[in-house]
Amino acid sequence: MSTTYRVNPGGSVRGTVRVPGDKSISHRAIMLGSIAEGTTRITGFLEGEDALATMNIFRALGVRIEGPDAGRVAVHGVGLHGLQAPSRELDCGNSGTSMRLLAGLLAGQRFTSVLTGDASLQKRPMRRVAEPLARMGARIETAPEGRPPLTVYGTTRLRGIEYAMPVASAQVKSALLLAGLYASGRTCVTEPAPTRDHTERMLRAFGYPVTSTGSTVCVESGGKLSACDIEVPGDISSAAFFLVAASIAPGSDLTLLHVGVNPSRTGVLEILRRMGADITLMNERLVGGEPVADIRVRHAPLKGVEVPPELVPLAIDEFPVLFVAAASAAGETLVTGAEELRVKESDRIAVMAEGLRRLGVEAQPMPDGMRIRGGPYGGGVVDSHGDHRVAMAFAVAALRASQAIEILDCAPVATSFPGFVQLAREAGLDIEERRD
Ligand SMILES: O=C(O)C1=C[C@@H](OP(=O)(O)O)[C@@H](O)[C@H](O)C1
Ligand SMILES: C=C(OP(=O)(O)O)C(=O)O
Image 1 (cartoon, protein in one colour):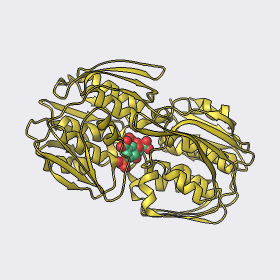
Image 2 (spheres, rainbow, N blue to C red):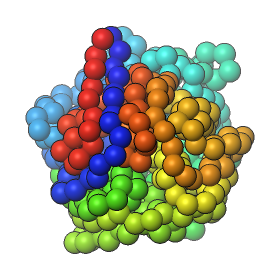
Image 3 (cartoon, protein in one colour):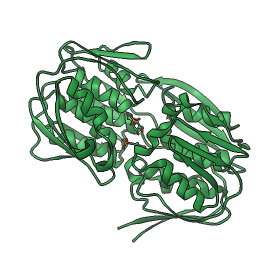
C-alpha cells in the first residue's frame, strides 16, 4: 500500500497545536529505563514507529514494558546486567537512532544480537559506530561497506577509549557512552561541533555521573542507573514544520505548546530568526532536565541567508523544511557543511533539490548543501522517496504554491509524526491523505 498526500495551495495556519513527543528523548527513555534499577514512568512518549521499534527491541531483550497508553509507558528496568539474549533478529525498522545506539549498548552484553532494518536503513553507514566500538574491544560484523545488518558479538571485556569523532553525530557519541557504561576505565568522546546532548542529560537524571569539559564528555563504568520519571517534551523537529508553515503563509499566527528547546536542538529557531521570522518563546521552563517552552510564530516576510555551518548540527533534521523556507524567502539562501544530509532516511540534498525543481524553484544541490533562490513557485507531483521529513516539508510548501502539490510515498511520516495530517488540517492546511 502506498500513501499519497494532496495539498491544495494557499491558506494560513492559526490556533494552538501540541506536536507529539520528542523522538530522540523517547528512544533514550526506553533504553535507559530498561537498564536502570526500578520502574521508570514515561509520559509524552512518542508513539511513532521509530520509538516503538526501540520499545519492541527491549521487550525482545527481556524487559517488561507496559504501554504505550496515550503517551504513558512503564519500563520495569532490569539493571545494567539484566538484559537477556534475544531469540530473533532485532528490527530497527526505519530508525538509525535505534540501530546506532543499540550497537553501543549491546556491545557490552554477554550475548550476541543481530540488528536489522528496512530498505532505507539498510543503506545507511554503520562503520561510524562499528569502528570506534571495535577500538573499545567490541566485535561487530557489518554487511559490505559497513551497512546493516549488524551482528554484535557481546563481550564483557570492553575497554574505555578517548575518541575524537570525525563527524558531528549524537548517535555516535551516544553509542560510545552507552558502551562506556560496560567498559573498563573511562570512555571519553570529543565532538567536532556540539550535537544534541539528550543522552548526557538523561544519564544524569538516572543518577549516573557524566563529566563534560569543553567539547569532551566522559563516563566511567561501575555506576548504576536508578529509575526516574520522564516527561517527554514535544519534538522541535516536528514543531519545525509548523514554524515554517506559519512563517511563510500570510495571515498565520500559531502557538506550539510544550516544545523541547534544548539549545543543542534550536538551530532551526536561530536560522529562521536570521531569515526574519517572528518567533517568541513563552513560559520557558525546565522539565526533567530538558528546557521546554511554548512558541508563538506569526507570518513575516523571510529573506535568504547564508547559514553558518556551525548551526548545521543544531538543526540537522530541519533542513528539508528549512529548504522550503528558503524557497519562500526573498533572495538567495546558501547551506554548506551539511554533507550529513546525504546519509539520512534519503539523500536529503538530492531529494529536496529534485522536488523543489519540480515545483519550479531554482535549487542547486552541492556536495555539502544547497543554494536556493526564493520566489513564487508552482505545484505538481513530488516524490518523498520514503523520507518522512521530505514528505512533511513539501506539504508545508503548498501554503505558498500556486497549484496543488501531490506528494508520493508518505507512509513513513508515521515513524516520527503520527497524526501529522490531522494536526496540519486543524492548523489550516488543506491536506488529504490517500492510501492505495
Ligand atoms: O541522536 C539522535 O537521537 C539523533 C541524532 C541525529 O543523527 P546523527 O547522529 O547521525 O547526526 C539526528 O539526525 C537523528 O534524527 C536523531
Ligand atoms: C535522521 C533521522 O532519524 P534516524 O537517524 O533515527 O533514522 C530523522 O528523524 O530525521
